[in-house]
Length: 121
Image 1 (tube, rainbow, N blue to C red):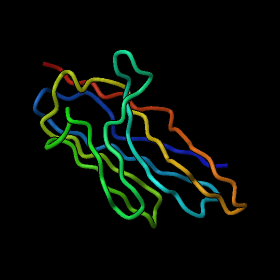
Image 2: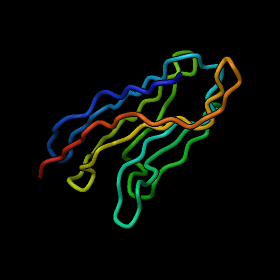
Image 3: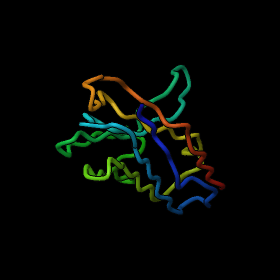
Image 4: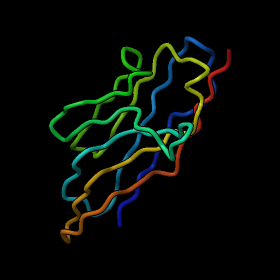
């Protein structure tokens, strides 16, 4: 079984910074992509940022230039550095691990429980 545990959320003033972490644990052989999502109007969740095992990144237009995603493959951990935060960034942020291959060669997608980020104006 694979579990994702997020940390780093909290309350911050507009213009401030937070760093989210998400550690995947379990019988993991390989993880394809990891990313962060948050709820969006008309969608269940929108992708905020993602990173492949090779390090290729993708960002939502709304966070480009402010957020940076990084990954430590040896620790199966993904990070999201959030700078210049805005009140509209307030949301529960969910970590995702895409196409996780376990030691028994099972492949699946996994989600964390979510971490609250609140940005006050």
